[in-house]
Every structure is written in C-alpha cells, then in structure tokens.
Length: 110
Length: 117
Image 1 (tube, helix red, strand yellow):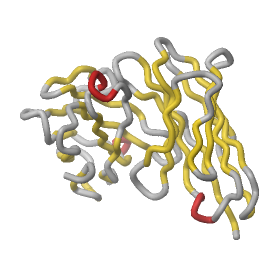
Image 2: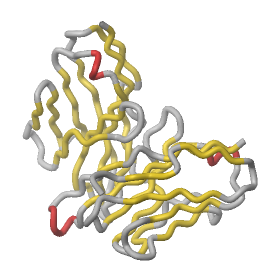
Image 3: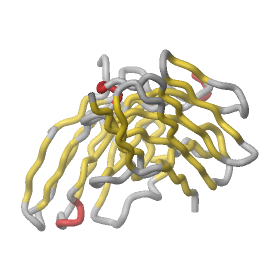
C-alpha cells in the first residue's frame, strides 16, 4: 500500500523564522511529488518535483526531492502570518492517483 | 469555468438519507477526481474519471458510494443511506490530460462539507 508520511504534524513559529517541513514516501511506480497549501478550503498548488536534487523555488518557498532516500523537504524562509496553513505533500503514482500525507499544520505568530 | 466549482458548500443531513454532491470542473479538463478529507487528515482518494468513464474507483469505501460523469464534464457523487462516519469534506479536483500537459497538477474546488446527524 502506498504511504506518505509528513513531519512534524504541527509547528508553531514566530514571524521571521525559517521552517522546514518533511515528507517521506513509500510507493510503487513513483511519477512525481507535489506540495499543496491548504488554508480554509481548497488546497492550492505550490510545487511539483520529479527529479532528484533540483530545487524548485518560488519567492520565500523552496522544495527539493531525494528519490534515493525517498523524501522531500519544503522550506519557508522569513515566515509571515499569511503562511499559516496546512501544507500537504502528495505523491503521484501510475494511474494518475495522488496519495496524500496527513499534512503539517503551520502556525506563524506575529 | 475559471475554477473548480462544488455545490453545495455545506450539507447537513440525517442518518439514512441520500445525498448528491456536484462538481463542475475547469473547462477543458478531461480528468476529474473525488477525494474525502476528514478533520486533521489529508485528502483520501475516492474515484478518478478520464472523460466519461471511471478509470479508477478503487477508493470508494463501499457500495453506498457512487459517482457519475455522464457527459465528461460535471460529476455527481452520490451517497446512499448516509452514516455518521460519512461526515467529511468532499473535495473535487480536475486536471488536463497528462499526455497533453506532461504533468498531473490537480486544481481543487473548495469542497462540500457533509455533516450526517
């Protein structure tokens, strides 16, 4: 059975801190790994990673994939209160299904 | 449409009743997914349509759950004889055919929150 595990499950930081969110996976027929941000309702897409060692970056967010060790990290630098959300990691396998982790609840306090 | 639209946004029903949840995907997206998200959990796969047909329905928990997409656009998730354990947010997502886009980035709707009393 495909499995995606995220850690920590919850994190509380102060504005300006840097955070690292972790995602490890055990799946058959890996195709890609995706990160989503979920505030109140709809998860919104952040990154898709398919190759090891290539960092994807968007503003203060960045992510990298290690296909040998089967994990990915999502970094957020200089956090802001607007970064408070649940961050979801998902792995796409053959058949186009996404398997999600439980998510990391990030709270950024002013 | 501009985004994935789901209705109703909230549905409260009594145990044993029948419910229908509707999803209107992004225009031109051939793939459509239903996920269920319980409080504090990640979304759990239910069913995936490619066009009108269900390409993978292995995530449906039992035969009380059924989904259709008769014209390859709007989809309806149907739940018969609802139980309290069915209470969750039901998320719909759509994406372009992977052969065209080379990737499978799902765009999610805001979800339908179902509460079974």
